[in-house]
Length: 358
Image 1 (cartoon, rainbow, N blue to C red):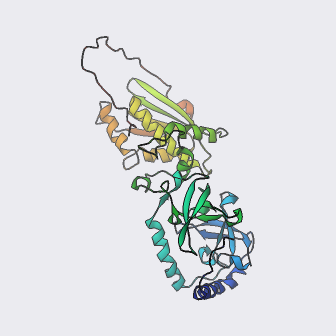
Image 2 (image 1 turned 45 degrees about the vertical axis):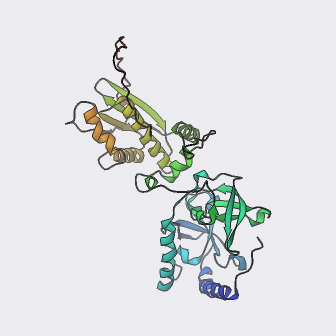
């Protein structure tokens, strides 16, 4: 343990009183028991008891839980008031109200940890001493169980035994940013997509350090899905042709499945502005197809494309249609129609924006 100065006696007494109120409840839990544990967003998710500790060091958080469907590296020690089970007595209303305040504060600040990398030097606030000390980033976790404190740091000059998981509120670094408004809400980038697609280039853009090229994200995605057997295929039809594409996707029960639907939406948008389209036909896993159909509808993430394409294609009275077919054979074949350009270059030059340039 890092040699921080001990807490004042008054604080220790308060902690002891609070811990004793949960001691009896901890005895009712057993390893392997199914329950629900509070995530950093204040919601409860399915979990399983991995270990019940009686150590004095674990008095504040004596129960180690595993979030169902996630890696064991995301297991977390939790206090009794963050667990729900019929075998546990209900926490007093007073305690619930006390918990509500910090939860609201947590939502006020949303950090973007994409800029933090292993071995990066940062300054971290030591709560017991009330000031910042130099540290190094060990790893940044993307697991659900680590959302409130996703950065594992190593205190410079101390042993690995003192390594600690901390949140953005305790870190000082130019590489740590706040999430932008664009990343929030239903149209934002899902955590699975951020994890796979935001790949930092070897040469950083000096005017936009946070820039992450789509091509690098797509390359990382294809590497992650090389063993996947499911595919999403689509066709974008126009008056004189049809554009086709096939993308490997994660199984619908996989934790990264939303990365598949997100990337498909981006690639379809790019193809639409390159070639135009009056209709989108999808074939693949039902859940992913339905998600993309919702994106390409009025009120969806790509409403602008849906409303613009009828005018672009010359039939503003005909709506952009999205259909889901059962078999790949039901999709129209790829077709390109060669366009003969004039040979007279003495006129005015035209520039056409393919989109995605922003």
